[in-house]
Length: 280
Image (cartoon, rainbow, N blue to C red):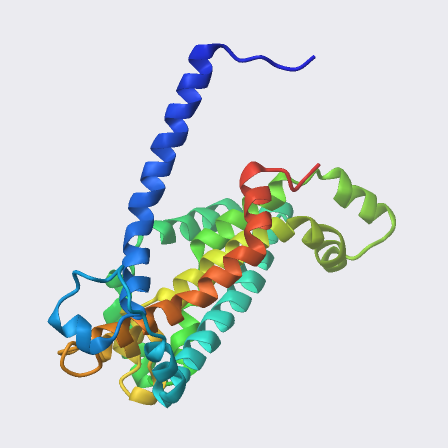
């Protein structure tokens, strides 16, 4: 029998929908503003931004991006750093999470608590020591220097450990009865069950690495090693007189496109992980 709703429930649901729609508009307003700026002529924007959402429009700002070699170099640096950190975090967090959740070894609980302490330590606390360490090894202005600090993900270890704990241990015991080695149990049996959690962790890691500004600002001092965040920020000095507000807005939209594409392709895995429907 079909479920019926009282009139008060329908009214409450409609109010929630309108509230959600209003909040969505507020959150999308800055995005729409940047997109509007990116398709306006720079000369017109120098006179004022009051007519952002009125014709005429132009794509010349995006065409100028294609002509700029710096932007594509910065894009490539960001892609290398984001993918390197994402792959590294997925590998290390999966191994550490499996060890903390399924294996017995000395000081396991103590080490896990120490890892969790990493969630409470802000990056600014260790930035001086990190800078000196990379300076001693001569790693600044390299992709390695931009990737390595992001590999220590306390959140990733915690997420994967909790996900491995949610998998019934009967699966391990059944594999052990077939004389399956522990690593093969991890790789062939349990890892496929953690794909939603890995997709979620991968997207969060990629997003943080792609938008990171603090560490690349310190480590990358040569223009050819800038990431997109640093490169775009470096071209914003006297932007209205130099690069143009429309061109900078087009760069911002260009920089955000990979994040949108990644989320569109993996949003199903995020919903599955958040809802806890991966292990059945």
